[in-house]
Image (cartoon, rainbow, N blue to C red; front, side):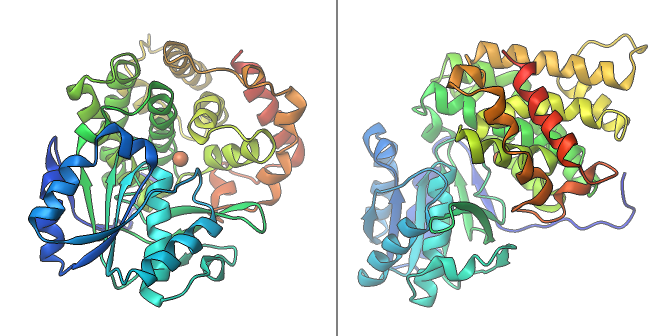
Length: 393
Ligand SMILES: [Fe+2]
């Protein structure tokens, strides 16, 4: 272990299991809610995932104002608009039924609703602020990805600056009903799943890893290995969806204390110039990151190999172990039909152009760059991004 004294958090309770969304009305009653802001994307509305939720709210006599405008990476201007509506509607709580961006949007709305304000940018000065509203926030994920229902992280886009930034706010309660993920489209299933995989790998290899984070991340990683491709190919397999839902939450709980690190910074770099989906950036980045870290954290790399059922002879070098894990990840990516950067119409130059984001920031998590033993130079960062482009065609 990296440290003998460590911290692990228990942020909020989770109710987990198929059908668990039916308890939302009862749980909101316990929290004293009378009228909530229900945040939910139009796709979720169409999928019918809301029916059980609305039945439960009606049975409990809880009113709600409905908001169905959501967008990737929770734009700040959208949060401001939604918060104004929630204030006008005199809501006293926020419930999100949706993916990672929807849940982060809800966290932003809750901050403003509690303060009766309409400008979230005020709380996004650069380094993440910790703000915990005094109103209930209930998050019910419909994808298995960000784990936002169990973490303090909300990623919000500062629209005026064109930058993704974080605010630290956690839910009051997470309700993880895997039935809600059954209608998640295959492409989103894959994107979200490779995000979970990256959360596991970066938590296991983090400088701040501890026994608590490790047991969660390794267990989550095994579940991703065994169930992500099945969820992509057969989205209605409830058993596989349940395993991925648990993996998503546990990977999130693992990185609450360890943070994610260089992999996610590299994703930010790709995102800045290529504007590709976060989870796909995670898929491209993780195999290269493993090779970069192989000699720094060899024992952890072996644990990752074991969790991913990589066959080893025991004679491999650290780098060879990392390469074999990368081969397994690439095979999963092909099964999930993940396109290459070139497949997204991006050139090697596009990928390398984001190197300054790795070296200079802005970073969501300020201490990220030092997880390898020295800060990366521009040359290192350009090589890293070039390797990512070349390694998956
Ligand atoms: Fe992520």
